[in-house]
Image 1 (cartoon, rainbow, N blue to C red):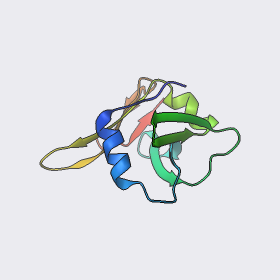
Image 2: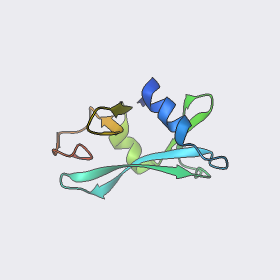
Image 3: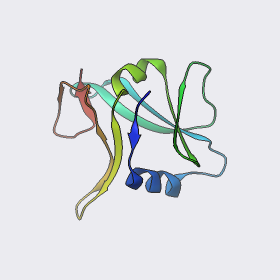
Length: 106
């Protein structure tokens, strides 16, 4: 599976990592104003059918099989401006989106 995690995102994931949490779970769920919404959560254990991505030596991302089909080739970034900051997703599989940037259609 090909997911790119930018240096800015890795830095922010490292800063937010708790001592006993091993992974971040990146995924999509039905919902949002365009059909699907992105998720990024802390996760202790990967399931047997999860895909494990080594974003960096100390940053591991897991993706479930359902989400993998929508996230292939996606990029996770962290953006900080004067008015807002947060993780952003650039997804080549998205056929549409909304103004908030956290939901998409495929």
